Image (cartoon, rainbow, N blue to C red):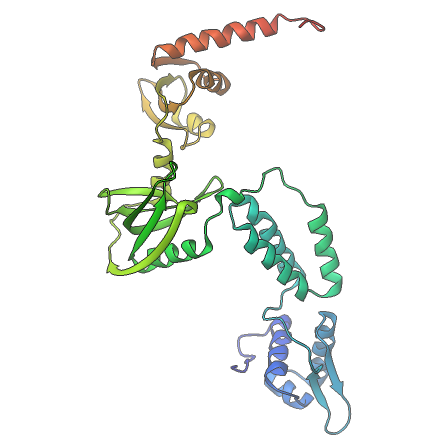
Length: 328
């Protein structure tokens, strides 16, 4: 282990951690030697030793002419030393991880390891956080990708290395394909990888939780200029096939439409003094409710059946508006 140097590390916390590393690397050190290595006086070294004890690190101070400082025999130091704020941030991140598509087993084991190495006082406070914190977003274990696949794809994208994928489709059919991964994207609780798919010859988007296996190859590639993985994922999701394709002219501005309509829901284009919305829908009655909820005047261009569903919704709302308390 390399010895820490105080140069450029004038912050007291940095020096305290440097002292801890010195004591880790050496069986025992005299106060004068620690002071010289840290660039402080011996009184400050005593304060640093007290600070380490406050953090739960048992530092033994040996008095006398040949005294010094050492760590308590048998004490196993954790590989990381975190401040209270840092430890809380790590725990919060891990607690939220399962809600945003991180593997549940990995987050639970990581939480357990962090909890074991926390000082007793902080461990109690963190446990209180775990016991009382709840989320409105449900855990998404089913969409959690394999950690190995995520890391393999990330490394391949950075190194511009082709990957051999074994992929399971939504129909549960497995295929093998070579992919030039341009980047990973986390969107709406799921992980995606986008890149050039040599099986189809097109830029494609794949869900990482459906990647059965990912093996890096030796072939390299160059990412085409102007490719934006985030934009491509969003556009790909907007083009997912549904039963109906809908085109509606919204009487509003493009900026207002974008604030109300997610890019994954529809394609928006300025046209004819308004905004043309092209979307796909499984059910036209649901599309009628969405249009009513936007609050913009609109003109249905296609399909013609959508107009009927809008009229049905209007009649239903009119009936609801006319009801009196106690009526069924």
